[in-house]
Image (cartoon, rainbow over all chains, first blue to last red; front, side, top):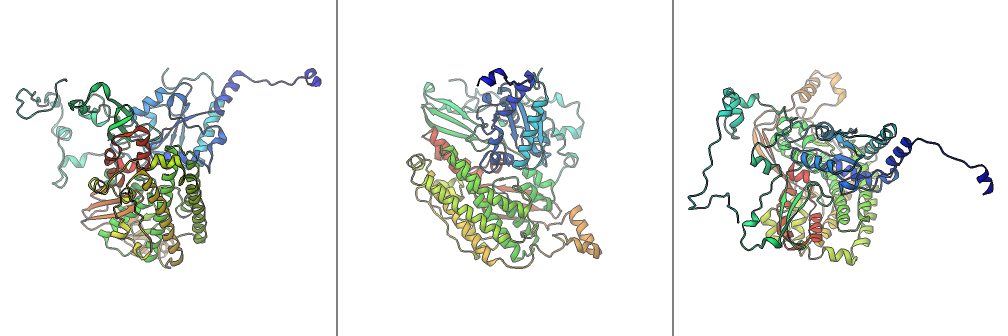
Length: 161
Length: 477
């Protein structure tokens, strides 16, 4: 012990890096399952793929406890106001992953019923392609989001300034 | 009580609705005005403004504040007609909304519950939050592309949807499906039934508090999905069963893969039953909860495990066999009380019976072609295109224009994991359906919700809803 006190080791980092790191390591997603992609999102969180490895398995039913919204599935015109309300209820800082073709662009359903991309409703950080994206794709999306958070500023305003 | 907006018989004081104001229309030309107000009654001659209208422009959100009716349709306003009931004491009842964003509603179902304390006196299911316009989309896709559309309807049993669509198209086409293709179809749909029921037992367990079931159910399902991925290339939304046969033959060594998957599922089933069957909490939460009588089930059109748990002996695989399923031996499990626990038992037994069918297919899989040889319906093998001009033309016609289906109407129903999935197709001779109506099992089940849920307490409502296994993509489509 005495030797360690004589020669103490220390760690240097910036506040930004430290804060970003803590944010990426315990990101709680809100459950916003809509359609097919929701099943794959559940599969990602379940046994075989085990999202817990990234500290993200705690799906919160209440948006007030969540930092990440995974919009999993096609968004209808009728559901759009609900999505926005859930997003508004989430506390800052918050991020959005648009999972799957329908959430990103409307997918194969270019018709009267669907919103052609959730980025018309909420600001989206990561688009995960696929119909539906497999668990590996979603995990890649989440890891990409973690990289994005690490590279970005800690003061971040989403959507509304 | 405030004034009722409804017209009562003999009530001369009721306000007369003003005709809509025409002035706003004056700037429009004749065609635009018709487009804004006219509706085209299906079956009559197509008016000329229909041809010019497209689905483009769907990108913009519906403008707010158009019409109160639109607000109701979009779910912002709920008609509180319970207040007009004289027996209700207003202070003692409250309305609680469950959903559409709720972890226990299995998607985006919204339940409008009238509570007295914790007792649910009335339930109104409000649907439409996942309306995707698939029946309309089906009219814009060729018959060949159509299965990509229907497979996304009930996303827990995509192969059953594809099978139903393919069968109804083939009914009008009149093509012969080779026995191997039929056996592959039955194999895939029965495996899909197992996968769907596994998800059901996982989410059902999760909703009533047996959280480990969520992990177990998805674990075993992965074994089946791995096989699906090997055969079709995708874990879900396969587009594998198509009019004329299936998209590709089974890969080499598929028997071992299926056997391995079945072994995993069989071991899993034992685990589930060890965990749940004698569990007093599980029994307490399920027995006698959410009862529906056989008469009610039939009156509301509930089919599948819900009706069978109530004792209605109706399975389309026995009643109206399709795709050669009559040659396999299996039993139809029936419940006695029609409660949540019976629905659990029926589904567990259905997994076993589906495994029985799959085992029989493993032994009797006929050799031969995996799709029809009719080159007007299925594309020729790649090699033939280099050798034969005719094959090249067939290939080009199928992938540019699509094959044509003779005019006519047909209905076909299959037993999906949720019940009777039926499709009604009207063809007018082109390469696209003129109309495709889908009779989805979850839709009928959800309308029977109030029967099962009335006078239950809130936790039992969750258990009942979970036991019905509604897929909202199937309800709203």
